[in-house]
Length: 386
Ligand SMILES: NC(=O)c1ccc[n+]([C@@H]2O[C@H](COP(=O)([O-])OP(=O)(O)OC[C@H]3O[C@@H](n4cnc5c(N)ncnc54)[C@H](OP(=O)(O)O)[C@@H]3O)[C@@H](O)[C@H]2O)c1
Image (tube, rainbow, N blue to C red; front, side, top):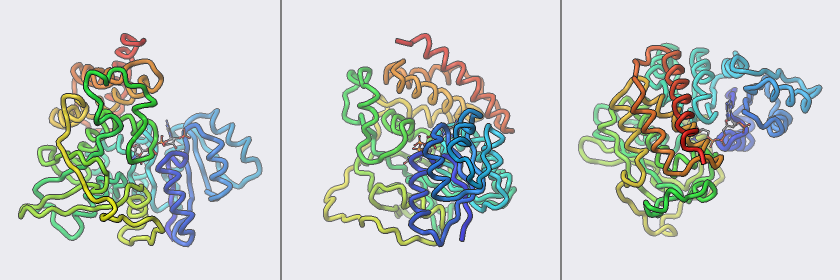
């Protein structure tokens, strides 16, 4: 039985992970959970899964949770130290990192430093400090298993092969909710419209990232550090149906890929139970029913965020962290009705243009770039605010 902590247990990845735990009670024991703001759902999860400890980022959240959980044998912690303590629980073997955004960096690094294997959904920490996280994982002798469906597909397509034989990685992208919207109409797109993802049901931030293609920009950076491949050998292919989850091209021009219906429980279960495959009772992919798979190139003119992802890697240092922070601020402002859809990429680009990148030799360097870029992007949002 594997003892796990789920960070971000109230989110889309978190609840899908708990669905797997419920299906295979003999395989997993939940020893820790963390949430953001949703004390009601976390209280329900405590009743169902009996973790030893849980944490919320604010004291007020933890206080509400204590009221809901009176008398239950669970330690309730709060603040960044509380999240890090749950991520480092001595009983845990693997930590599912599924907080959204840069808020996951400190607790994920704490988990690695406490010698926990990581099932990584939370891509933003890899974007902010990928090299640092990988170096730390190597030092501690732990592995970072990808949960993102594209990176899981690449991970699976690399199994039994040598990285030196890889010619390039090809990340597939659905294109998001706005793929067919003409450029001149993008500025009038509402959050409700941009949240209508064609294939995946995910949290709001990643759904907007999919619509801007920033999600793919973040994934290029994530792939660079997860697989130690330079960005010049990472390509992106639009594949509307989200059936081929990504591909690896080898030097002999063979391509190997992983296919499946879009359901995050497949990559989550692989990361949880690697190298075993759990017998998930999900619908099979019927290619005769699907009939046709389509592919095309990304449109960098309508969706500049993907290009910014590549650019951040070429510049290097803290630039990806600054890009990520600006994106978080801009997406939040768009979701709250403060700016237009097309302002998101403008804000990220302007933030990157004024950022002076430093080497990411420490966690503090990544956090300082994050702090600086949030402030900068926030001032740009205010200047644009409607
Ligand atoms: N959803 C997917 O299919 C998918 C696929 C690939 C990768 N990912 C990645 O996985 C991560 C999670 O995505 P998601 O779609 O599951 O997001 P989500 O549904 O929005 O869930 C986010 C989780 O993080 C918690 N949280 C938010 N802010 C926090 C903070 N400041 N401190 C601590 N916890 C906080 C939320 O808590 P509350 O809800 O309690 O506020 C929730 O549990 C993202 O990095 C995303 O890019 C997701």
